[in-house]
Amino acid sequence: MQEALTIGQLAARSGVAQSALRYYERLGLIRADRTGGNQRRYHRGELRRVAFIRIAQQVGISLDEIRAALDSLPASRTPTAEDWARLSTAWRERLEEKISLLVRLRDDLDGCIGCGCLSLRRCALYNPADELAGEGPGARLTLPR
Amino acid sequence: MQEALTIGQLAARSGVAQSALRYYERLGLIRADRTGGNQRRYHRGELRRVAFIRIAQQVGISLDEIRAALDSLPASRTPTAEDWARLSTAWRERLEEKISLLVRLRDDLDGCIGCGCLSLRRCALYNPADELAGEGPGARLTLPR
DNA sequence: CCTTGAGTTGAACCTCGCTTTAACTTGCAG
DNA sequence: CTGCAAGTTAAAGCGAGGTTCAACTCAAGG
Image 1 (cartoon, rainbow over the protein chains, first blue to last red):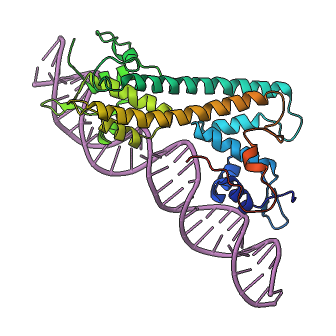
Image 2: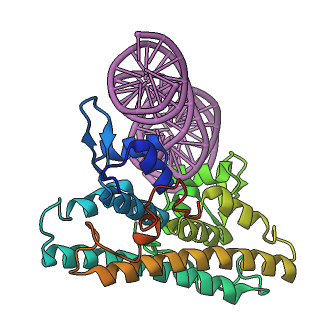
Image 3: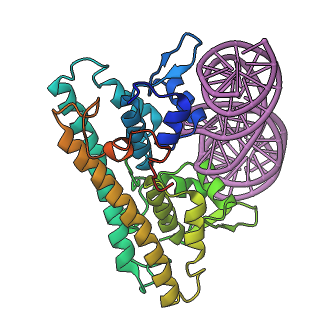
C-alpha cells in the first residue's frame, strides 16, 4: 500500500477532475506535497477531504464556507475536542435549517396536489409573504440568505 | 386593494431586486402586463411565483428547472389534476433525495463530534470512497451529479 | 409646464466554480 | 539514450445568476 497519490490517482478515486483538484488547492481546500520535480503527491487523508467537499457542495454550501470549516480542523495536529464540537455544532444548525426548508417545500408541494393553489390560491408556502397586503411598506419575505 | 403591483412594489414585497425580477421575466419565470407607457404591472399572483422561485433556489434547484416546473402549471387556465400530480411527484423525488443527503451529512457529522475522524480516521461518510484502496482503478465516489 | 422619482432598455460587468488551452517538464519503460 | 503518458503553469473561457450603467421615458404633484 503506497503512501502518496498522484493527481491522476486522486482524480480517479474521488471522481473529481484534476483541474478541479488544482483549483481546490489554490483555494486552500486541500493540500499536496511536491516531488523533486514539482509534481503533487497527496496523502490518502486528502481523499476524505475531497469527499467532504463534494458532499457539502451537494447541499449548497459554498467552497468558501467549506474552506472555512476545513480550516478549523486539525491542520495535521491534535484535533481539540472543542474545535470539533464547535465545527460540528455550527454545521448542524445550517443543515437543520436547510432540511426544514426542504421538508416544508416538499410537504407544501404535496398538499397542493390537485388543488391548483400554486397558480393563484391560498397555500401555506406562498401566504406568509402575501396576506400582509394592505398598503404599508413592510411585508418582506425574509429568507435566510 | 389595488390589482397591479409596480416593479418597485413587487421588489419590496418579495425582497427580490428589480434587476433580478427583470431577469426572471427574460427567462420566462414570471410575467407582467404593460401600461400604456410600457411599464410593468404585476398581478398579485406573481408574488407567489417569486416566493416559490426563491424557495426552490434556496434548496439548489436551477432557474431553468424552476422555469420548467412553472411552465407545466396552469398558465391561468384549468390546472389539470394530472398535470399537478406529475409536477408534484417529480419534485417530491428530487426533494426526498436532497433531504436524505442532508440528513446523512448531519448525522455523520454528529457522529464525528470529538472523535477526530474528519482529519484521518474511519467515518461512515468518508469510507465508501477510501476503504477500496488496494490498487485497482475502480473505487469511484459516485455522487448524484 | 416643470421637476422629481420611478421605470425602461441594452450592453457591459461581476462572482463562482470550474474547464480548456498552450507551452512546457517529469517520470518511467524499453 | 528515446519516447510517451502524465504532470506543471498562467491565462483565457464558460455558464449561471445576477448587478451596474448610461441614456432615456413616464407618472404625479405643485
